[in-house]
Length: 188
Image (cartoon, rainbow, N blue to C red; front, side, top):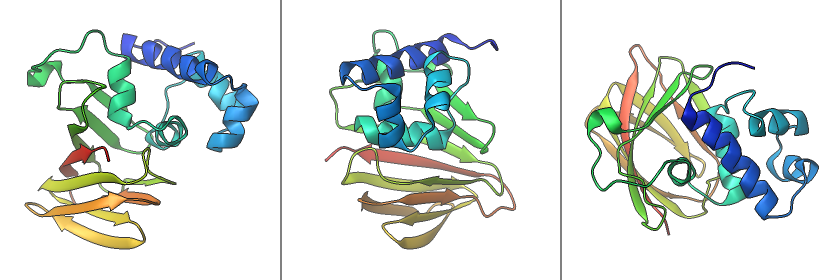
């Protein structure tokens, strides 16, 4: 088993708790999420860290945003986070880095996330974690191509795209440099 930091270990525990709370077997969760039973078992035992795509599928099944799920594995949430305290999650495989800018709080509806994609990174989600999730995506550096609800938009530095997500989505960095953008999420 590889070394995992505390957040990864708490995330594994929380994923197992969510499944047990619903009374689902690993097989039932595999059917609901489209993730293999063996991968789910390894995730819950903290043998592997989830990719952004896997975590997105689990968030959809558990009807949580990724930020809410990650907030649930944090200790007591603070009201103010300095840049150095903001949790950063990396998916090296896909080239996605996610910083939770907003102090976590499961009871609030809005949050701010900073995302970075390396050139060529391409991440797809089958469905939103919460249908009707409102998103504002503000490109800070580079450009990001976003497909939401069947429409594709190129958002360049300074531009902002706003939509409610009902279906699949895709985030792609066309390059030549990385894409850095802020996501403002508002639960319906």
